[in-house]
Image (cartoon, rainbow over all chains, first blue to last red; front, side, top):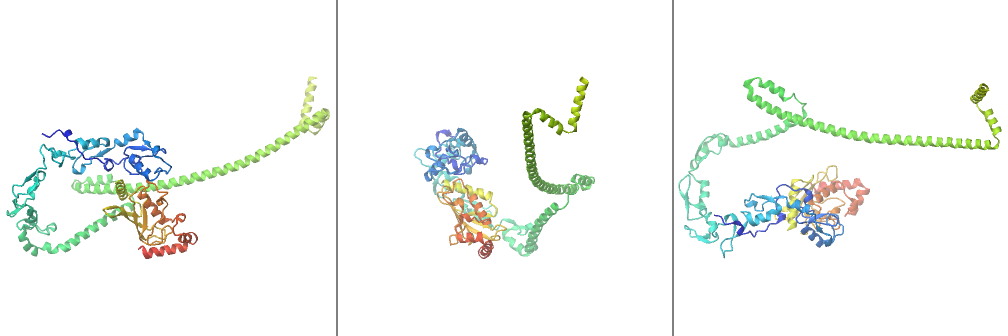
Length: 397
Length: 152
């Protein structure tokens, strides 16, 4: 039974700044100084936010805000709004022991307690009193793994922890080679396997089609007479060349597809091809390549449309500017005209005033004479009115 | 150390999203404070076709102190000192205008921008700056010649 984990808390400290985040956090939550998500965020008088540790470091060097260089004192720095602290504390981080194998992800404010109390990969102190060794929590069984033990075969002394992996390295233990059934000390076995003369291996030119395989010791004979091996250099050259040509061909085809006018839709051609049942296979292939072509066409058309759209946008903008200019010009012209008309009206008004004033003057001077003069100076219509008036008077009479 | 962490982060960011015309990497894997930078001369400038190598040195106090940029390739430019240091004068690299929020990528972007258009107000080589202002043809000729001679 595993010991209750909470009894031994890990002494491993968590460096919050070194944590990796599950998703890259918003740029708004990064400290301008360390470029990491804020840790214990604080706010300056000029409303910039930093990690508490970062701004202290910065203020030690210069009493200005690191963003706008306004004067700043230690007293002008206050804790940032709790909302900001909560936002950064809730960011999901990966466990710092991820490289050792811990798959845990959790909110940043929980990661310290995870490492201290839960993480199976955190290092904790060994259970045994008096043992100073450290051990990963998941390996910390009830007994101490740091006790020194002796290997039963080589009499080497090692920690219990390492005993598990020791047999592979123990020089006194030997295993049989799976090919030649000879026995070798464990440390040498791996080297032997690479050169064991009894292992059955394929001809060196097997990837060019040679089906021969034999024991390593006998292969040399075959190699000297194998046609495939003799042809290997030239075959190799050809394969490389074909590969480069294929790449080139692909690139050229893509270019061509972009340049050619769009072909008929794939649905039409595939309908035609599938009418022949024997050709179903090739039709499928045709269709995929056709689809690919079609995608290219769509893509190029999209590009074209986009450039058209951009061109139109520019034209519209130009037109806008032109229209604005025209409107302004016209407005200016109208303004000028307006002022001209206004001046003319003013002139007329002045004249009218003058006329009225002069008439009033003459009216007070001698009404009768003025009236007579006005009758004498008035037009035919005035006379006509007078006449009609007199006519009316006549009727009245 | 905070500086190392931030620089490592910036290097990763820069490799993922490089500035056009600029490539950069560490001089050696175990020292993040020394960067190798390669600028390619922008088209349409007298430096076009040239490849300029620079050393970017970050102070241990980074980001509180600005980095320094030195051309190791000789270049005829008003903003680059014409000595064996080849130090580049960039507005944001002066310690009174440096801000810890500035990034290395921004510095490199501005350096690449200076190749496209020298800044005579910030010049270190006043004679080159005067030539650039008053006799642009002769400036271009020399700059092109130096590019051909030293930056190929």
